[in-house]
Length: 365
Image 1 (cartoon, one colour):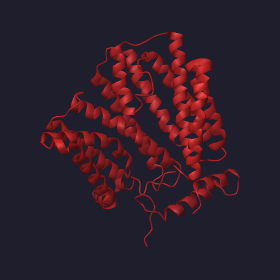
Image 2 (cartoon, one colour):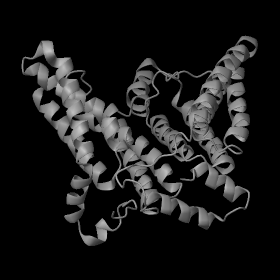
Image 3 (cartoon, one colour):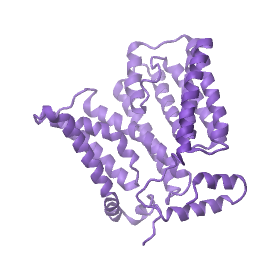
């Protein structure tokens, strides 16, 4: 089996054409399990070794820059180093995991650079209530509540997010890392919500949740556009779609569960059952479009709901192991029966719709 990195290098060195590389990927996919979401995370242990080295290099480099120049110089230094390292490990070596790590580091540090600069230039801070709203309703679904100071004024956050989007466009133009599309889309969603908060300072929490839900649906539709342009999943577009689905899931699930729980940290029986219904609905969509990534974001919420049900059933001493056992059984069952479930779903769809959902290549043996 020829690796994707070897095929990319062969195209770059004009050994084969892009069309021939695509046909070789199709031939390789024909020998694989149609259930597998084939992702280019690691092409060898060298990827893990380099990713470890990146962390060991960038962390102390940032600390040294912070000592001599402060937080602005720290984040600017990390962003610049991440770009320079990508010139070698991404553009020349085409290493999968290091490319993902360097992209995430570059986008995060770019946002931080813009954020710190704007904070110092404007010297504007948001009210505590606004800070808490951004932490709960924006940082929560994206999963970065602990990384950034979310008390920044919405205007500064909007500008920093837009700057990050622009830098993400340049990064993708230069390096073509599939996760860049999702990272830039996340920054754009943040900009949309920050812009709404800036335009309407008294916007209630439920309206913010609704806006995040709309963003999640739009990201999901964008992911499906990439999926539908590569139904057999043999090109780079399927990797782009994977990361977009991974982003869309929390943006959809978080506001839905927030609406059910009304912001409470505990659920009653009715709320727990509604949460499980949302999770099962998400699971049905995941099976239909053959994307397990959609289920990952819902697992925590499903566990939260199961925990509430077990607690109210009186099994207080067993609530943690019982919850883990139930979630594990579900994951194993749906993994074992993924293909029969998907076949059953597809048979019940209209032919014109069934033909438009992804169907990875498989050959009979």
